[in-house]
Length: 301
Image (cartoon, rainbow, N blue to C red; front, side, top):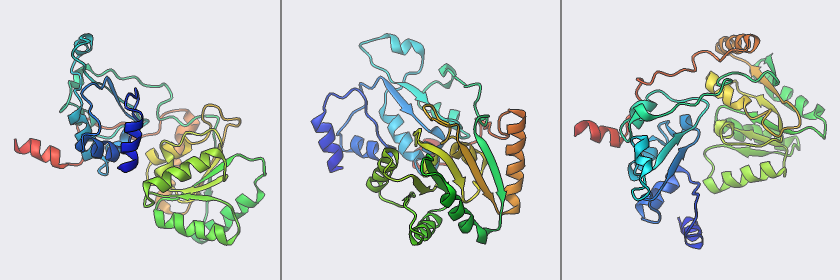
């Protein structure tokens, strides 16, 4: 927290604070910051923030903010209330139940993009049925034939050990790349993100950590070395190409190795052909989120 404290002391009158849930909670506990005069709180990538890893931290942050319960609360300049904005391509089940503990869910306004949960038509998608033992050679051949002028490449793996192992293979073949996975320290991850966005290396081997929040126009190709477990994960991964500012539309190549992957492929191909939303993306607001210490305490009371 030393670096955070130095930043806050150096810029005591900042108008915008960008923070992870963990760092913000630590700062709140140590009274390094206060949310009493906060006018707007944005929860970006809501599906990630409200998974079991961050849920309790997010609840703690919400409990510190004087959240508005109605539009009338925003009219009094002498009694500052916090307007809550929740952003995401997919929302987890139970979101309304969580928010209703801190605000009046009936006054939330929902804004929906017409292309929500739809695969963008300008992104070329290719599915390669392949045996697991052949994936490495297929990836190496793909990297070998890439043009030097090609944009950046993201290689997605489902687990951190696979990222480490594949990175070792690429090192043996003298392939310059970066690797990124959630078991790395936060400072290291931030440095890798920055290096990739600056173009220091054009290949990033990563977990789904890079499928959310990585906003760069450099990526022209993603490879699902491991096929994603869910349609939500596929949507987020493919969303890293063809972004605003990109010079090319982008492509996605997925290695399909397991029989259970085929069903997801059929659903993706059907949605792309019909230009419709991916199936099963709507979540019931009545479906509960994982319990935390705060929710258990509320039940006991």
